[in-house]
Image 1 (cartoon, one colour):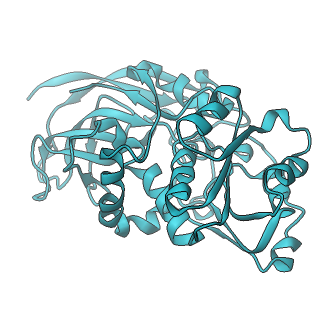
Image 2 (cartoon, rainbow, N blue to C red; image 1 turned 90 degrees about the vertical axis):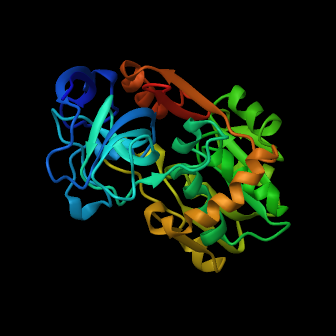
Length: 344
């Protein structure tokens, strides 16, 4: 059996505060390219890795009962969603050469003992990297949060924060497909232009240039907000609560402004949910994966026909992974952040 040097991204120790590239190291260890005897798992070669904001929460220690996902283990490879090629399989539903997406290690090769969370890739006429984003977990997140939780109606007013990211750029375009009025916010002129010129948002603004978020939202939504797709939290959520229309819906997808704070910010305007008969609901995409076949039927024709655009920020090589991941939290990426481990 072949033995290789397997390059890996290792978390040095639990992180407090804002993470740094130096919190991770890239190293190599020996790996036998062979499944253990009797294994029902798979040996895979990793091709594309997904950088996602929720990974920040896994870099800190927390009791597993307080989160839907475990912390990373210090001195061990980190993990996340990715696209992989099966080299050997103990699962009768997967065979050598199959392409899959799901949870995998941040390393060149991984032995995955459980295959329940892996999705076989059947459509290869689109870029494989899309399965880290628009056709993977972020795409399903946007779809479930917007269509299942928000239940949009034509003519409604939709606001999306962190709108140029992997999820936000899709929510805005979904809103336009329904016939809604969509406004997004982002953290640079380049991203704001992208929202309007590439993704078709009706309007967009740079939240960093708005000293009063409440006033900004009243300017962009003089009649109020029907749907707020929440990716940021903190002061932005508080401002949105002051600008809701009756029966507004707020799918809580993420709160990236809070992930690096040792003491999260409180929310002050929750009374508005009562006054506006509004609904705010958190969700985790894993609860909605049963909808994945339906999602593919919906999204693939739109991609092929050019109705939906998708922008990726590509980092080449596993050694670029730490910088790419940390860049999410300063807004350095433009579009979906992907790390290319191997293109074949």
